[in-house]
Image 1 (cartoon, rainbow, N blue to C red):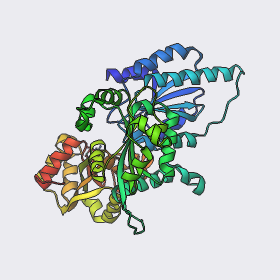
Image 2 (cartoon, rainbow, N blue to C red):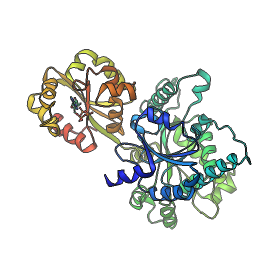
Image 3 (tube, helix red, strand yellow):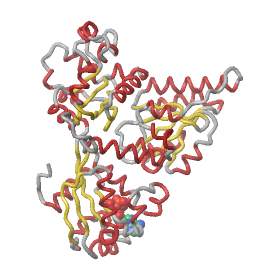
Image 4 (cartoon, rainbow, N blue to C red):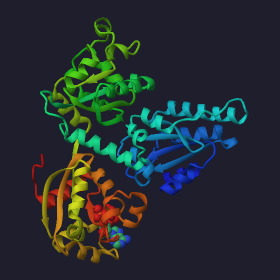
Length: 457
Ligand SMILES: Nc1ncnc2c1ncn2[C@@H]1O[C@H](COP(=O)(O)OP(=O)(O)OP(=O)(O)O)[C@@H](O)[C@H]1O
């Protein structure tokens, strides 16, 4: 609560699309910390932001906001990321993105933008038009379809999500039968290279030009423990201390790539492991081209074999289980449509059964709500007929299922998440079509409670 109050002092709080649209009317620079409800705004840079606000505050050109991605459709591409994202908006246009807690970069960007605004105000400089789409593209979003088909932003996101998930979970879908099998591989761009954003964009371009699909991506700052775990087979090598220092020094970009023969193809593109060898033997290889001065280790990684790729992908993008339930009323009226949405979103249905919850089960299920005015009605509505009870499995399953369900109240869902299940199929706030575990712990305990102790794998 205390922290929330501190935020209110200098950061506007944006929790819905209307407030977001209003924010776009702000003149000058707005720095927006895009956060998700489950983790809250970024506390790590709040002092830095406040300092900059004090430094540049007087001419009212610099503003700050926090925006909850979960409830703002425009911010859908930033959901389900475990890193903070800062958007920089000038006169209603997003002009830059900084991912991760990168204080120096945030500070540099703010200083540049404020200086530029001052110069424009003083008539020393003209405003140049910035294409938001280009920025989003540079940040790794695939939006080529926008120009070709004039899709709406919402449609673009749906197309992107569907093909991304299709590519990962069903890598051979739609591929003509050839000898080559579509594979997955893991690619890493290490922190020292990732800092050079231009290099990152040209590598991403090369990846796409070479026919890879980026099935999943995220930037994370590895802890020492995670680095040791990931590189445990290298622990005794003389380069290990450098590797450890490098990998923990800032965000690493982690990519799940798919294409035919992905593992070998990516390794070919990377070139020899030792930078000096790469420069000598294959100067066009990525490791040679993107070597960082004075750092002996290559800045790019690729899995060695398809088996390693599986293990490494599991390390960075672990599969998760959640308990999902189609409530009785929706199970009767909309089961097929809801199941279609489950499949389209890339969930694997690891367990499924149809049965009516007993009153005891329903009470146990919603025991946190015991005593609330709607509790008895809730129990009745949950027991009035068979529910479809499922264990859904995929990367980030708990959070993704909650996203797909939408807000508890269908009226809110229609406003903020029109594609969600509750927006489309819920009757009212009580009979709201679906249930989903609120976090991983709840997921495991309710899966155990309903399906018993089973090995879902
Ligand atoms: N104000 C309300 N009036 C009537 N029913 C409500 C109200 N708030 C919650 N409920 C019912 O209680 C259930 C549990 O509420 P909770 O706040 O945990 O929502 P949720 O996490 O979105 O949904 P669920 O736990 O079912 O996945 C809701 O799904 C809904 O059926």
